[in-house]
Amino acid sequence: MGWLTRFLAAVAFLAIGVIFSPETFGSKSDGSGSPKLSTYLKLAHLLCFSTAWGAALWVTFIGGIIMFKNLPRHQFGNLQSKMFPAYFSMVGVCCAICVGSFGYLHPWKSASTAEKYQLGFLLSAFAFNLTNLFVFTPMTIEMMKQRHKVEREEKLGDEVGWSKNREAAKVNPKLAAMNKKFGMIHGLSSLANIMSFGSLAMHSWYLAGKINL
Image 1 (spheres, one colour):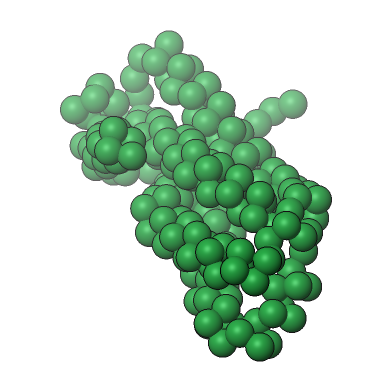
Image 2: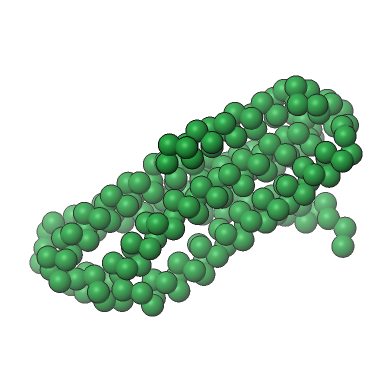
C-alpha cells in the first residue's frame, strides 16, 4: 500500500494545485486554454467519472448483495477483504482525476456558483473514498479476521447468511461483542460509501444538463 499512498497523495496535491492556482498549469482565469487539451481533459473526466459511478453502483447495490446471498460467509468476507481496497483505490484515483480536470476546466476565480458546488461534490466523493481506503476498510478487515477466528471455534462460517451466527451470539458474549463492533465499523464504511455515491450522483445530474444528445 506504500506506493499507492504516495501516488494518491501526489494526485491529490496536483488536483488542489490545479483548483487554486490553475494558471500554473496553463489554464486562464477566464476559462480559456488549449482546445485540444480541454478535449482531452473532458474525455478523462467523463471516462473517470463513468468508471467511478459504474463501479460504485455495481459494488454497492448489485455485486456485493449477490455474493452475500450465494457464498459461504467466510469465503464472502475473504473475497471482500481483497476486493474493497482495490475498489476504493480505483474510485479514489478516478475521483482525483475528475477533481483535477474539472478544476482546470473551471478555474475557481471564474467558476460559477454551480460549478463550485460540483467541485465540492467531487472533492467529497474523493475524501469519502480515501477515508474508506485508509481508515474504515483496514479496521473492518482486521475485525473480520478476529471474528472469523472465534466463529471457526464455533464451527461457523461455511453457511450462507447470518442465521447461525446470530444463534451462536446469543450464548457467546465474545462473539456478540465482536458482532456489535464489526457492525458499527462496517456501518461507518457503508455510510462513507453511500455518501461518495450520492456525491457522484449529484455530479451526474450536472453532467446530464450539459450533454446534448
